[in-house]
Image: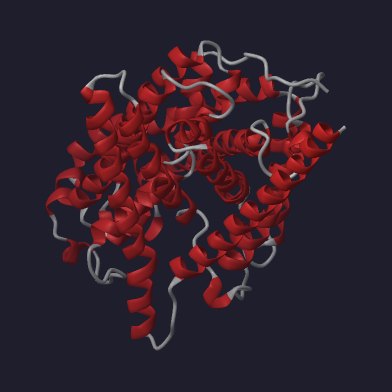
Length: 489
Protein backbone atom coordinates (compact mmCIF):
# COMPACT_ATOMS: atom_id res chain seq x y z
CA UNK A 1 0.00 0.00 0.00
CA UNK A 2 1.04 3.57 -0.67
CA UNK A 3 -0.44 6.85 0.42
CA UNK A 4 -1.74 9.62 -1.85
CA UNK A 5 -4.48 9.71 -4.50
CA UNK A 6 -3.35 10.54 -8.04
CA UNK A 7 -4.80 13.42 -10.08
CA UNK A 8 -6.99 11.52 -12.55
CA UNK A 9 -10.12 13.64 -13.09
CA UNK A 10 -10.55 16.76 -15.24
CA UNK A 11 -13.01 19.68 -15.30
CA UNK A 12 -15.57 17.83 -17.43
CA UNK A 13 -15.76 14.95 -14.95
CA UNK A 14 -16.20 17.40 -12.07
CA UNK A 15 -19.03 19.24 -13.89
CA UNK A 16 -20.65 15.92 -14.73
CA UNK A 17 -20.44 14.95 -11.07
CA UNK A 18 -22.31 18.09 -10.03
CA UNK A 19 -24.91 17.74 -12.78
CA UNK A 20 -25.00 13.94 -12.81
CA UNK A 21 -25.43 13.48 -9.06
CA UNK A 22 -28.06 16.22 -8.76
CA UNK A 23 -30.08 15.08 -11.76
CA UNK A 24 -31.20 11.65 -10.68
CA UNK A 25 -34.71 10.44 -10.03
CA UNK A 26 -35.75 13.45 -7.98
CA UNK A 27 -36.66 15.76 -10.85
CA UNK A 28 -38.83 13.04 -12.43
CA UNK A 29 -40.98 12.08 -9.45
CA UNK A 30 -40.74 15.24 -7.34
CA UNK A 31 -42.75 17.13 -9.97
CA UNK A 32 -45.73 15.06 -8.84
CA UNK A 33 -44.87 15.43 -5.15
CA UNK A 34 -44.57 19.21 -5.42
CA UNK A 35 -47.88 19.54 -7.25
CA UNK A 36 -49.51 17.44 -4.54
CA UNK A 37 -47.92 19.59 -1.84
CA UNK A 38 -49.18 22.80 -3.49
CA UNK A 39 -52.58 21.26 -4.31
CA UNK A 40 -52.05 21.77 -8.04
CA UNK A 41 -50.78 25.35 -7.82
CA UNK A 42 -48.30 25.46 -10.72
CA UNK A 43 -46.87 28.99 -10.08
CA UNK A 44 -46.27 28.09 -6.42
CA UNK A 45 -44.55 24.90 -7.55
CA UNK A 46 -42.25 26.88 -9.86
CA UNK A 47 -41.47 29.24 -6.98
CA UNK A 48 -40.47 26.22 -4.89
CA UNK A 49 -38.10 25.05 -7.64
CA UNK A 50 -36.63 28.57 -7.89
CA UNK A 51 -36.12 28.88 -4.12
CA UNK A 52 -34.59 25.41 -3.93
CA UNK A 53 -32.31 26.29 -6.83
CA UNK A 54 -31.20 29.57 -5.26
CA UNK A 55 -30.41 27.78 -2.00
CA UNK A 56 -28.21 25.38 -3.94
CA UNK A 57 -26.63 28.21 -5.96
CA UNK A 58 -25.77 30.40 -2.96
CA UNK A 59 -24.24 27.46 -1.09
CA UNK A 60 -22.26 26.29 -4.12
CA UNK A 61 -20.99 29.84 -4.79
CA UNK A 62 -19.79 30.14 -1.19
CA UNK A 63 -18.01 26.79 -1.41
CA UNK A 64 -16.62 27.70 -4.83
CA UNK A 65 -14.79 30.61 -3.19
CA UNK A 66 -13.41 28.27 -0.53
CA UNK A 67 -12.32 25.83 -3.24
CA UNK A 68 -10.00 28.50 -4.65
CA UNK A 69 -8.24 28.74 -1.26
CA UNK A 70 -8.27 25.28 0.32
CA UNK A 71 -7.19 21.98 -1.21
CA UNK A 72 -6.35 18.85 0.75
CA UNK A 73 -8.25 15.54 0.79
CA UNK A 74 -12.02 16.01 0.69
CA UNK A 75 -13.52 19.42 -0.12
CA UNK A 76 -16.30 19.81 2.46
CA UNK A 77 -14.14 18.34 5.24
CA UNK A 78 -11.21 20.54 4.18
CA UNK A 79 -13.40 23.65 4.34
CA UNK A 80 -14.69 22.71 7.79
CA UNK A 81 -11.13 22.23 9.05
CA UNK A 82 -9.87 25.51 7.59
CA UNK A 83 -12.76 27.66 8.80
CA UNK A 84 -13.91 26.08 12.08
CA UNK A 85 -11.22 23.64 13.17
CA UNK A 86 -10.11 20.02 13.17
CA UNK A 87 -12.69 18.76 15.66
CA UNK A 88 -15.58 20.19 13.65
CA UNK A 89 -14.06 18.83 10.45
CA UNK A 90 -14.11 15.39 12.02
CA UNK A 91 -17.80 15.75 12.93
CA UNK A 92 -18.62 16.76 9.35
CA UNK A 93 -16.54 13.93 7.89
CA UNK A 94 -18.05 11.37 10.27
CA UNK A 95 -21.59 12.52 9.40
CA UNK A 96 -20.93 12.39 5.66
CA UNK A 97 -19.40 8.92 6.01
CA UNK A 98 -21.95 7.27 8.30
CA UNK A 99 -25.21 9.03 7.38
CA UNK A 100 -25.22 11.33 4.36
CA UNK A 101 -23.50 9.24 1.67
CA UNK A 102 -24.97 5.84 2.62
CA UNK A 103 -28.57 7.01 3.17
CA UNK A 104 -28.81 8.62 -0.26
CA UNK A 105 -26.96 5.74 -1.90
CA UNK A 106 -29.41 3.21 -0.47
CA UNK A 107 -32.40 5.21 -1.71
CA UNK A 108 -30.93 5.62 -5.20
CA UNK A 109 -30.23 1.87 -5.45
CA UNK A 110 -33.92 1.19 -4.81
CA UNK A 111 -35.04 3.86 -7.27
CA UNK A 112 -32.71 2.50 -9.94
CA UNK A 113 -34.19 -0.96 -9.46
CA UNK A 114 -37.75 0.32 -9.36
CA UNK A 115 -37.59 2.25 -12.63
CA UNK A 116 -35.70 -0.58 -14.32
CA UNK A 117 -38.52 -2.99 -13.48
CA UNK A 118 -41.19 -0.47 -14.51
CA UNK A 119 -39.50 -0.16 -17.91
CA UNK A 120 -39.24 -3.95 -18.29
CA UNK A 121 -42.94 -4.29 -17.51
CA UNK A 122 -43.84 -1.56 -20.00
CA UNK A 123 -41.97 -3.49 -22.71
CA UNK A 124 -43.52 -6.82 -21.75
CA UNK A 125 -46.77 -6.44 -19.75
CA UNK A 126 -46.99 -10.23 -19.42
CA UNK A 127 -44.11 -10.27 -16.94
CA UNK A 128 -45.52 -10.93 -13.49
CA UNK A 129 -43.76 -9.72 -10.38
CA UNK A 130 -44.25 -10.96 -6.84
CA UNK A 131 -46.57 -9.18 -4.44
CA UNK A 132 -45.46 -5.60 -4.02
CA UNK A 133 -44.34 -5.33 -7.65
CA UNK A 134 -41.66 -2.75 -8.49
CA UNK A 135 -42.15 -0.98 -5.15
CA UNK A 136 -41.32 -3.59 -2.50
CA UNK A 137 -41.47 -6.95 -4.25
CA UNK A 138 -38.70 -9.52 -4.05
CA UNK A 139 -37.41 -8.60 -7.52
CA UNK A 140 -36.88 -4.93 -6.74
CA UNK A 141 -35.08 -5.75 -3.50
CA UNK A 142 -32.73 -8.22 -5.19
CA UNK A 143 -32.07 -5.80 -8.05
CA UNK A 144 -31.38 -3.01 -5.55
CA UNK A 145 -28.71 -5.12 -3.85
CA UNK A 146 -27.22 -5.92 -7.26
CA UNK A 147 -27.00 -2.22 -8.15
CA UNK A 148 -25.30 -1.46 -4.82
CA UNK A 149 -22.75 -4.21 -5.45
CA UNK A 150 -22.17 -3.11 -9.05
CA UNK A 151 -21.69 0.55 -8.08
CA UNK A 152 -19.25 -0.49 -5.37
CA UNK A 153 -17.28 -2.72 -7.75
CA UNK A 154 -16.92 0.00 -10.37
CA UNK A 155 -15.81 2.67 -7.89
CA UNK A 156 -13.57 0.50 -5.72
CA UNK A 157 -11.84 -1.42 -8.50
CA UNK A 158 -11.77 1.02 -11.42
CA UNK A 159 -12.21 4.68 -10.41
CA UNK A 160 -11.36 5.89 -13.92
CA UNK A 161 -14.17 3.77 -15.35
CA UNK A 162 -16.47 5.23 -12.70
CA UNK A 163 -15.55 8.72 -13.93
CA UNK A 164 -16.30 7.79 -17.54
CA UNK A 165 -19.61 6.22 -16.49
CA UNK A 166 -20.50 9.47 -14.72
CA UNK A 167 -19.87 11.52 -17.87
CA UNK A 168 -21.82 9.08 -20.06
CA UNK A 169 -24.89 8.84 -17.84
CA UNK A 170 -24.99 12.61 -17.40
CA UNK A 171 -25.27 13.08 -21.16
CA UNK A 172 -27.96 10.37 -21.41
CA UNK A 173 -30.11 11.68 -18.57
CA UNK A 174 -30.25 15.18 -20.06
CA UNK A 175 -31.96 13.87 -23.22
CA UNK A 176 -35.51 13.35 -21.85
CA UNK A 177 -35.31 16.48 -19.72
CA UNK A 178 -34.34 18.77 -22.60
CA UNK A 179 -36.82 17.12 -24.98
CA UNK A 180 -39.66 17.52 -22.49
CA UNK A 181 -38.70 21.10 -21.72
CA UNK A 182 -38.76 22.10 -25.39
CA UNK A 183 -41.44 19.89 -26.96
CA UNK A 184 -43.65 19.95 -23.87
CA UNK A 185 -43.63 23.74 -23.95
CA UNK A 186 -44.66 23.80 -27.62
CA UNK A 187 -47.29 21.10 -27.04
CA UNK A 188 -48.69 22.92 -24.02
CA UNK A 189 -48.97 26.24 -25.85
CA UNK A 190 -50.71 24.62 -28.83
CA UNK A 191 -53.20 22.61 -26.74
CA UNK A 192 -53.85 25.24 -24.10
CA UNK A 193 -52.66 22.92 -21.29
CA UNK A 194 -49.99 25.33 -20.17
CA UNK A 195 -52.32 28.30 -19.89
CA UNK A 196 -54.91 26.22 -18.06
CA UNK A 197 -52.40 24.87 -15.55
CA UNK A 198 -51.11 28.35 -14.76
CA UNK A 199 -54.49 30.02 -14.44
CA UNK A 200 -56.84 27.37 -13.05
CA UNK A 201 -57.15 27.45 -9.29
CA UNK A 202 -55.95 24.55 -7.17
CA UNK A 203 -59.45 23.83 -5.91
CA UNK A 204 -60.64 23.27 -9.47
CA UNK A 205 -57.69 21.03 -10.29
CA UNK A 206 -58.09 18.64 -7.39
CA UNK A 207 -60.77 17.82 -4.89
CA UNK A 208 -58.38 16.43 -2.30
CA UNK A 209 -55.41 17.85 -0.52
CA UNK A 210 -52.89 16.51 1.97
CA UNK A 211 -51.69 20.00 2.82
CA UNK A 212 -52.64 21.70 6.05
CA UNK A 213 -50.69 24.98 5.96
CA UNK A 214 -47.64 26.52 4.32
CA UNK A 215 -47.42 24.27 1.23
CA UNK A 216 -44.40 26.26 0.04
CA UNK A 217 -42.24 24.94 2.90
CA UNK A 218 -43.10 21.32 2.13
CA UNK A 219 -42.46 21.96 -1.58
CA UNK A 220 -39.05 23.53 -1.04
CA UNK A 221 -37.97 20.63 1.17
CA UNK A 222 -39.17 18.25 -1.55
CA UNK A 223 -36.91 20.01 -4.07
CA UNK A 224 -33.94 19.43 -1.76
CA UNK A 225 -33.75 15.76 -2.78
CA UNK A 226 -33.76 16.72 -6.47
CA UNK A 227 -31.12 19.45 -6.03
CA UNK A 228 -28.87 17.66 -3.58
CA UNK A 229 -25.66 15.81 -4.36
CA UNK A 230 -23.53 18.63 -5.77
CA UNK A 231 -21.42 18.77 -2.60
CA UNK A 232 -20.21 15.22 -3.30
CA UNK A 233 -18.19 16.61 -6.21
CA UNK A 234 -15.85 18.08 -3.61
CA UNK A 235 -15.00 14.53 -2.44
CA UNK A 236 -12.68 14.14 -5.47
CA UNK A 237 -10.76 17.28 -4.51
CA UNK A 238 -7.51 15.34 -4.05
CA UNK A 239 -8.01 13.54 -7.39
CA UNK A 240 -8.97 16.56 -9.50
CA UNK A 241 -6.42 18.13 -11.80
CA UNK A 242 -5.79 21.79 -10.93
CA UNK A 243 -8.46 21.54 -8.23
CA UNK A 244 -8.27 25.18 -7.08
CA UNK A 245 -9.19 26.27 -10.59
CA UNK A 246 -11.45 23.47 -11.81
CA UNK A 247 -13.55 22.71 -8.71
CA UNK A 248 -14.96 26.26 -8.39
CA UNK A 249 -15.81 26.23 -12.11
CA UNK A 250 -17.51 22.87 -11.77
CA UNK A 251 -19.63 23.97 -8.79
CA UNK A 252 -20.78 27.16 -10.50
CA UNK A 253 -21.36 25.80 -14.01
CA UNK A 254 -22.97 22.62 -12.72
CA UNK A 255 -25.36 24.48 -10.40
CA UNK A 256 -26.55 26.81 -13.17
CA UNK A 257 -27.14 23.90 -15.57
CA UNK A 258 -29.15 21.95 -13.01
CA UNK A 259 -31.37 24.89 -12.01
CA UNK A 260 -32.13 25.82 -15.62
CA UNK A 261 -32.90 22.24 -16.65
CA UNK A 262 -35.20 21.63 -13.66
CA UNK A 263 -37.31 24.75 -14.07
CA UNK A 264 -37.77 24.39 -17.83
CA UNK A 265 -38.49 20.67 -17.48
CA UNK A 266 -41.15 21.38 -14.84
CA UNK A 267 -42.80 23.87 -17.19
CA UNK A 268 -42.57 21.36 -20.05
CA UNK A 269 -44.31 18.71 -17.96
CA UNK A 270 -47.06 21.22 -17.21
CA UNK A 271 -47.59 21.55 -20.95
CA UNK A 272 -48.01 17.81 -21.41
CA UNK A 273 -50.92 17.12 -19.07
CA UNK A 274 -53.30 18.74 -16.63
CA UNK A 275 -52.10 19.34 -13.10
CA UNK A 276 -54.73 16.90 -11.84
CA UNK A 277 -53.41 14.09 -14.08
CA UNK A 278 -49.81 14.80 -13.09
CA UNK A 279 -50.78 14.80 -9.42
CA UNK A 280 -52.50 11.41 -9.79
CA UNK A 281 -50.26 9.65 -12.32
CA UNK A 282 -46.90 11.42 -12.25
CA UNK A 283 -44.80 12.87 -15.06
CA UNK A 284 -45.14 9.70 -17.16
CA UNK A 285 -48.63 10.77 -18.27
CA UNK A 286 -47.19 13.99 -19.71
CA UNK A 287 -44.51 12.07 -21.64
CA UNK A 288 -47.12 9.67 -23.05
CA UNK A 289 -49.37 12.55 -24.12
CA UNK A 290 -46.51 14.36 -25.85
CA UNK A 291 -44.50 11.47 -27.31
CA UNK A 292 -46.99 8.58 -27.45
CA UNK A 293 -47.12 5.28 -25.53
CA UNK A 294 -43.88 3.79 -26.86
CA UNK A 295 -41.62 6.79 -26.39
CA UNK A 296 -43.48 7.82 -23.26
CA UNK A 297 -42.68 4.50 -21.59
CA UNK A 298 -39.04 4.78 -22.67
CA UNK A 299 -38.94 7.58 -20.10
CA UNK A 300 -38.68 4.89 -17.44
CA UNK A 301 -35.48 3.61 -19.05
CA UNK A 302 -33.97 7.10 -19.04
CA UNK A 303 -35.00 7.54 -15.41
CA UNK A 304 -33.36 4.22 -14.52
CA UNK A 305 -30.12 5.25 -16.26
CA UNK A 306 -30.35 8.64 -14.58
CA UNK A 307 -30.66 6.97 -11.17
CA UNK A 308 -27.70 4.72 -11.93
CA UNK A 309 -25.56 7.75 -12.72
CA UNK A 310 -26.52 9.38 -9.44
CA UNK A 311 -25.95 6.10 -7.60
CA UNK A 312 -22.46 5.92 -9.11
CA UNK A 313 -21.60 9.42 -7.91
CA UNK A 314 -22.95 8.75 -4.42
CA UNK A 315 -21.02 5.50 -4.14
CA UNK A 316 -17.93 7.46 -5.13
CA UNK A 317 -18.45 9.54 -2.01
CA UNK A 318 -19.13 6.44 0.11
CA UNK A 319 -15.87 4.77 -0.87
CA UNK A 320 -13.83 7.83 0.12
CA UNK A 321 -15.74 8.75 3.29
CA UNK A 322 -13.64 7.01 5.93
CA UNK A 323 -10.46 7.91 4.05
CA UNK A 324 -11.25 11.63 4.32
CA UNK A 325 -11.38 11.21 8.11
CA UNK A 326 -8.42 8.83 8.47
CA UNK A 327 -6.14 10.96 6.26
CA UNK A 328 -6.18 13.52 9.08
CA UNK A 329 -5.31 10.91 11.70
CA UNK A 330 -8.87 11.03 13.04
CA UNK A 331 -11.50 8.38 13.76
CA UNK A 332 -11.10 4.67 14.42
CA UNK A 333 -7.94 2.98 13.12
CA UNK A 334 -6.71 5.83 10.87
CA UNK A 335 -3.60 3.83 9.97
CA UNK A 336 -5.91 1.22 8.44
CA UNK A 337 -8.36 3.46 6.59
CA UNK A 338 -5.87 5.93 5.10
CA UNK A 339 -4.09 3.24 3.09
CA UNK A 340 -4.21 3.44 -0.71
CA UNK A 341 -4.08 0.31 -2.86
CA UNK A 342 -1.19 0.69 -5.30
CA UNK A 343 -3.01 -1.23 -8.05
CA UNK A 344 -6.39 0.56 -8.00
CA UNK A 345 -5.22 3.84 -6.38
CA UNK A 346 -8.27 3.58 -4.11
CA UNK A 347 -8.63 3.45 -0.29
CA UNK A 348 -9.81 -0.16 -0.25
CA UNK A 349 -10.47 -0.44 3.49
CA UNK A 350 -12.43 2.80 3.43
CA UNK A 351 -14.46 1.48 0.49
CA UNK A 352 -15.44 -1.68 2.37
CA UNK A 353 -16.67 0.32 5.37
CA UNK A 354 -18.62 2.61 3.03
CA UNK A 355 -20.36 -0.41 1.52
CA UNK A 356 -21.21 -1.68 5.01
CA UNK A 357 -22.92 1.60 5.94
CA UNK A 358 -24.91 1.53 2.69
CA UNK A 359 -26.14 -1.96 3.54
CA UNK A 360 -27.21 -0.89 7.04
CA UNK A 361 -29.13 2.14 5.77
CA UNK A 362 -30.73 0.10 2.99
CA UNK A 363 -32.20 -2.21 5.61
CA UNK A 364 -33.48 0.81 7.52
CA UNK A 365 -34.94 2.38 4.37
CA UNK A 366 -36.80 -0.82 3.55
CA UNK A 367 -38.18 -1.20 7.05
CA UNK A 368 -39.19 2.45 7.35
CA UNK A 369 -40.67 3.05 3.92
CA UNK A 370 -41.18 -0.14 1.91
CA UNK A 371 -42.01 -3.06 4.20
CA UNK A 372 -45.73 -4.05 4.19
CA UNK A 373 -45.72 -3.30 7.89
CA UNK A 374 -43.26 -0.60 8.93
CA UNK A 375 -40.62 -2.29 11.04
CA UNK A 376 -39.73 0.87 12.91
CA UNK A 377 -43.30 2.11 13.48
CA UNK A 378 -43.34 5.67 14.84
CA UNK A 379 -39.52 5.68 14.70
CA UNK A 380 -39.61 5.79 10.90
CA UNK A 381 -38.38 8.91 9.11
CA UNK A 382 -37.56 9.97 5.57
CA UNK A 383 -33.92 9.03 5.05
CA UNK A 384 -33.94 10.68 1.61
CA UNK A 385 -34.56 14.24 2.83
CA UNK A 386 -33.57 14.72 6.49
CA UNK A 387 -29.85 13.90 6.04
CA UNK A 388 -29.80 16.45 3.20
CA UNK A 389 -31.23 19.17 5.41
CA UNK A 390 -28.71 18.26 8.12
CA UNK A 391 -25.89 19.17 5.74
CA UNK A 392 -27.30 22.69 5.51
CA UNK A 393 -27.19 22.94 9.31
CA UNK A 394 -23.55 21.79 9.23
CA UNK A 395 -22.73 24.34 6.51
CA UNK A 396 -23.69 27.35 8.65
CA UNK A 397 -20.65 27.29 11.03
CA UNK A 398 -18.41 26.86 7.95
CA UNK A 399 -19.86 29.93 6.27
CA UNK A 400 -19.58 31.99 9.46
CA UNK A 401 -16.02 30.78 10.08
CA UNK A 402 -15.06 31.75 6.54
CA UNK A 403 -16.37 35.29 7.09
CA UNK A 404 -14.15 35.55 10.17
CA UNK A 405 -10.95 34.16 8.67
CA UNK A 406 -10.98 35.05 4.95
CA UNK A 407 -9.28 38.44 5.24
CA UNK A 408 -7.59 38.19 1.84
CA UNK A 409 -10.70 38.14 -0.39
CA UNK A 410 -13.16 40.82 -1.53
CA UNK A 411 -16.19 41.85 0.55
CA UNK A 412 -18.47 40.13 -1.96
CA UNK A 413 -16.72 36.81 -1.46
CA UNK A 414 -16.09 37.22 2.27
CA UNK A 415 -19.44 38.58 3.46
CA UNK A 416 -22.16 38.73 0.79
CA UNK A 417 -22.02 35.18 -0.59
CA UNK A 418 -21.58 33.43 2.80
CA UNK A 419 -24.40 35.55 4.28
CA UNK A 420 -26.76 34.56 1.47
CA UNK A 421 -25.70 30.95 2.00
CA UNK A 422 -26.41 31.18 5.75
CA UNK A 423 -29.87 32.66 5.13
CA UNK A 424 -30.64 29.98 2.54
CA UNK A 425 -29.48 27.20 4.85
CA UNK A 426 -31.54 28.57 7.75
CA UNK A 427 -34.63 28.71 5.53
CA UNK A 428 -34.12 25.07 4.53
CA UNK A 429 -33.81 24.02 8.17
CA UNK A 430 -36.98 25.89 9.14
CA UNK A 431 -38.87 24.40 6.20
CA UNK A 432 -37.73 20.91 7.19
CA UNK A 433 -38.88 21.40 10.80
CA UNK A 434 -42.31 22.23 9.46
CA UNK A 435 -42.45 19.52 6.78
CA UNK A 436 -41.08 16.67 8.94
CA UNK A 437 -42.00 17.88 12.41
CA UNK A 438 -44.95 20.22 12.78
CA UNK A 439 -47.08 19.02 9.87
CA UNK A 440 -46.74 15.25 10.54
CA UNK A 441 -47.54 15.90 14.20
CA UNK A 442 -50.70 17.87 13.36
CA UNK A 443 -51.85 15.34 10.77
CA UNK A 444 -51.22 12.39 13.09
CA UNK A 445 -52.95 14.15 15.98
CA UNK A 446 -55.99 14.85 13.81
CA UNK A 447 -56.11 11.13 12.96
CA UNK A 448 -55.75 10.11 16.60
CA UNK A 449 -52.10 9.04 16.30
CA UNK A 450 -48.65 10.36 17.07
CA UNK A 451 -45.70 11.05 14.77
CA UNK A 452 -42.77 13.48 14.87
CA UNK A 453 -40.27 11.84 12.50
CA UNK A 454 -37.70 14.64 12.70
CA UNK A 455 -37.31 14.07 16.47
CA UNK A 456 -36.47 10.39 16.02
CA UNK A 457 -34.02 11.26 13.26
CA UNK A 458 -32.28 13.81 15.48
CA UNK A 459 -32.01 11.24 18.29
CA UNK A 460 -30.38 8.72 15.94
CA UNK A 461 -28.14 11.46 14.52
CA UNK A 462 -26.99 12.40 18.04
CA UNK A 463 -26.23 8.76 18.92
CA UNK A 464 -24.16 8.21 15.76
CA UNK A 465 -22.24 11.45 16.30
CA UNK A 466 -21.59 10.53 19.95
CA UNK A 467 -20.20 7.14 18.87
CA UNK A 468 -17.93 8.92 16.42
CA UNK A 469 -16.64 11.29 19.11
CA UNK A 470 -15.97 8.42 21.53
CA UNK A 471 -14.11 6.43 18.87
CA UNK A 472 -12.02 9.48 18.04
CA UNK A 473 -11.16 10.07 21.69
CA UNK A 474 -10.10 6.45 22.02
CA UNK A 475 -7.87 6.86 18.98
CA UNK A 476 -6.41 10.10 20.36
CA UNK A 477 -5.70 8.46 23.72
CA UNK A 478 -3.99 5.51 22.03
CA UNK A 479 -1.89 7.85 19.88
CA UNK A 480 -0.87 9.90 22.92
CA UNK A 481 0.13 6.73 24.78
CA UNK A 482 2.22 5.66 21.82
CA UNK A 483 4.00 8.99 21.68
CA UNK A 484 4.71 8.81 25.44
CA UNK A 485 6.28 5.37 25.04
CA UNK A 486 8.45 6.61 22.19
CA UNK A 487 9.61 9.57 24.29
CA UNK A 488 10.42 7.34 27.25
CA UNK A 489 12.40 5.00 25.04
